Every structure is written in C-alpha cells, then in structure tokens.
Length: 331
Image (cartoon, rainbow, N blue to C red; front, top):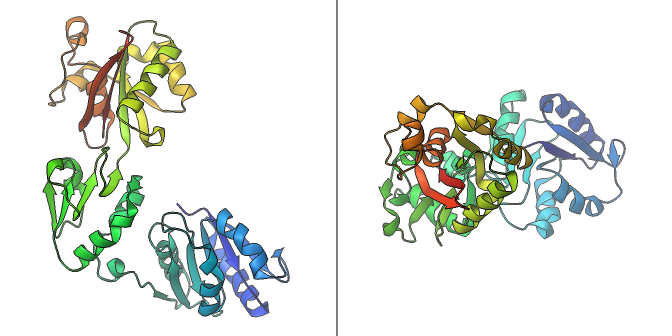
C-alpha cells in the first residue's frame, strides 16, 4: 500500500510543477525535494539512498534518462524496490518506470492520469496492456505473502502467450480468481515448473500464502501462557509465519475466558466468537470432538477456524496441547 511519496525536482520549473502536483495527492504523505525549498539538497546522489529506503514511491520530475542512471545503483528486487514514476514538467505525460505492480508505480500512474488534466499514461507492463491476469497483483490486493518470486516471469510469460498454467489451490480460492483464461485447477501432487501454488504449504514453485484463521478451544480456566505456548507450537509444527495469521476464532461459550482474551490482546489479534447454530451449520468434515458430548457441537477449534475464514477451507486439523488447548487453521 502506498503511503509515503517523495517528489524529486532538480530546477525551478520542476519545483513549480511539484507544487501544482501536491493537491492531487492529498491522501498521501508527500515530501518535495528540491535545491531551493521544502527539503533541500545540494547533490541528488547525496539524498537518493535515504529516499530509496524511506518512501513507498518516488515521483521524479526529471529527464527519464537521468532518473534511470541515478537509481540504477539502488535496484535490489521487485518485491522491495519502491515504485518510481516519471512525470514531465507540464504534468501531462506519466511513465511508470519501476516496480509497476508490487511497488505500486502502475497504480500511482493510473491515479495521476485520472486526476491530472489531459494526462497520458505510459504503462509498459505487458499484463496491463493485454488485460492479462497478474498473479502478483492478485496477491497484493488480497494480502497474500509471496515466495519464490523468481518463478513469476515464467508464469506471466505463459499467460501472455496463452499457454496453460496449473494452479494448485482449493476450489473456493480458484473460483474467486476473475481472469481464469488458461488456468487449470490441479491437485498438489501435480505441481511442476509451470504451476502456481496458492496455499500455506512448502514448494519450490511460485507460492502465494493466503491469510490463515486460527480456531482455538480450551478448557475452563486455561492460562494465557499455556494458550500462547500451544499457539506457537502449532505455528512451528506447520511452519506458519506469525505475519500470516489474520484472526482468531472460538465458540461463544469461551467469550469470557480470561486466558484466551489476554492472549488475543497480547498478540494484537482480533478474536471472533460464534454461536452453536453457526458452527453446526457447516457441512465440512471435522475431527471427533469432546464438544459434541458437552455442547452438542461439531467441534470448537476446527469449525470456528472455518467459520471465520474467507474461503471456508480447513487446512490444518486440530492439534491438542497440554490436554487443555486445541488449535486448528483455515483459509
């Protein structure tokens, strides 16, 4: 998400253009760099390293060639480089130069084109020009973590060339993809170098990890520390990153469990509680549970994880820790 933008100018005309541009970027935190006012500098080379690290995007009102030469030493990776947009002094020609997708340069260029009078946008990304699915943009919009990004070029080229791409994921996720031309849903045992995997699994291929919902059940009076230890053992068991957890969920009877509430607060995670009727309405197959005997309930950890999840897919069956905590995961 774009929040902080640096506008780089190099002379009076480009500075005046930057001042005119400011009103069109009201929702962003914007700094102007110039040799005259605002944040001043003597040499562009002196400020570029800090700008590169500090801002989500850079708008350069400079000659395109000069921008290319100046930023070249700082290029690292498309997953971490800021978006770079180049605009002319008249503010009517806009070029998305670098990190068009993950860095947000295309998004910023499109936004400015819509707002600036008579502006023409030069976005050169092939998937944008051909209205082809860009998996990295799908992941960015949905908050999915990306691994093995080096595999993206092959996948994008296959889609651009109208060749088949295998997608190993769950049916609900596959059906949620809008542009499915040349995509084929396959099982996780059919993965090859022409595959995309959307699931919290390990693979050498292009991988997108959806946000995971954790369902928790616990005995009455279970302490926060016990729940926390079980939680992190579960994450370690399934090699889940803490950053991939979206929310917690449980049965409404647990809504007054001090240990559970304290744990959720300490972890800064929202926790949702569901009624028996809601959890029993799920048609998924769940592991046998003592909750059936005590509450006439299909379960706690697994059903609540599914109920709170986006795609209603149980991906990690429940594990029991210290005979008092049950934990499951869904996407």
